[in-house]
Length: 197
Image (cartoon, rainbow, N blue to C red):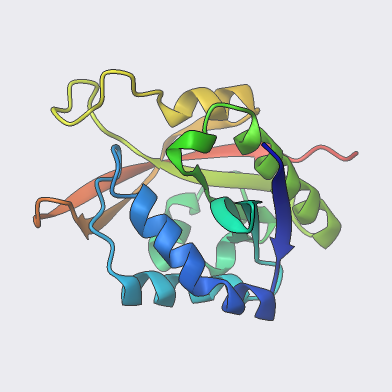
């Protein structure tokens, strides 16, 4: 398997929006998100990633995008993502948000996630402004009826790559799940201090 990685910023992100929206809609239908994504909403959200210092890193196999990682200065994210950091030791202008690291099933658990996260972190270091990277994960009960038997929680990946859970720093989002019902979902923040290389 030869995977090509490509860093996209600014106008290059705009050109890839349709592909990225399709990837997100497909993957986020799975547990734990169970998200019934709508293309226009996805495209509207992804346009945030054309902002200064934002990036998308795609992973392609024989020309087809099979995975991606995204990042954006946290201060450019939605208000629901900013408020949880009020009163913490993490200044908003020093935080860079990793929106996702996701792959189609055949490309998981082979080290690509670590590689794409490293590429995001390398890019963030070149910006010269951000001390931390952060992300948010959905909180689901271990006994959720739709949890697959072989499900591997994203928390293992975050622990392995140096993120720590920010206890008490969380937000909530509402989205329509695959069964057509809108539900509110708690999202837990994690953080990692960037090391100079």
